[in-house]
Image 1: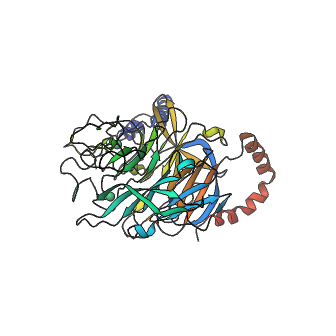
Image 2: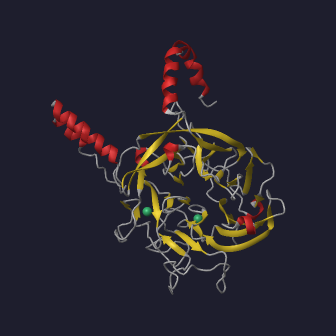
Image 3: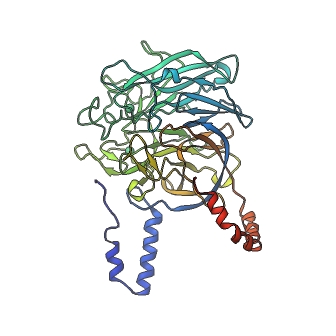
Length: 478
Ligand SMILES: [Ca+2]
Ligand SMILES: [Ca+2]
């Protein structure tokens, strides 16, 4: 509704000029317009030249939303239903590391944005055994939907089992509605805990328990619509944590001291680059038009709800003074509906991905018309190309030698292991559902192998032609 169409005149150009030179110049221009795909300009995300393969590591989860490590080879998977599961030596252990489902609100299987939404191991976990979770608990405050809880736990004598009784509530606040909860946790390279929070929910950042006129995300007197930053190793008077001295509002008499950045709508996931200059990459889920990737800086205002991505959203609010996304794509191109932030790849196994930001989208399209049953075309995997310093373009991965895409499941999150290798977390349902899996991003055969594959393909072409219907049928959902 607030979207401009930069291509509204291109049809007119094409119909007025028919000369070969002009046509080829026009095609070149059109190609450049699509290829550049600068923020704010609409163009479907092109397929990139990077290919990956996905190797299933674990099935039998419900709605895995994040995976990380504790400084060793185990992979810890946070499942939205309230469990942290351990994958050790390639096996999903039957006993959860932690099960906090009894402390949570009951989730709606078809669609629910609440639950266990984040976890982080203390930088000194090997010494102190402390880890942190973000979950949605019932609230007793009339008129509010639920209570966000960020808690500290410690591991038990068994390294694969956390101590549920060790809970220390670090930070808690009520949520206006059930949606837009952010919920991601990460320790930064500075040793502080970063927490993402959404605008509170509903739509347009307005309504019950949303600040009038500005909305919650532009209101720095509450904790909604932010990246927060706290020090869990010290306690200021009356707090279970302390405020880092260089938080942007650390000495404010009105703004919340916990705020590190603001103007966010639903910052569902973020990560620090473990290489480079440790930038904080964040995916902020848009409302109806724009999905954005941000680099979060101290004190930055990321625009919601004055703007949705680079597009004007609320003309009653100032339209300048915000940090624009480094990349953006649009619902109207059917490129996605909810950005899922990932990681800059710093692993050693896939040379072609070195230094590449890997992310994706929950689903190419989504249909809420039968709510709470929600359907869609399934998730996608993207990456960023830095075409010139500070200018990023979005590309879609080729998945597998047959460039088959994710094939239907919804993308719930990403994970990173101790070696910097990355994982894709999928579910067959938009909502928590009942079918979640963990897949590792691995290399596809090198170009030399591609060449020999080509030779083999020629040699076996008659066989491949005979087999094609059966191969095609195998990929059809049943
Ligand atoms: Ca909420
Ligand atoms: Ca923004």
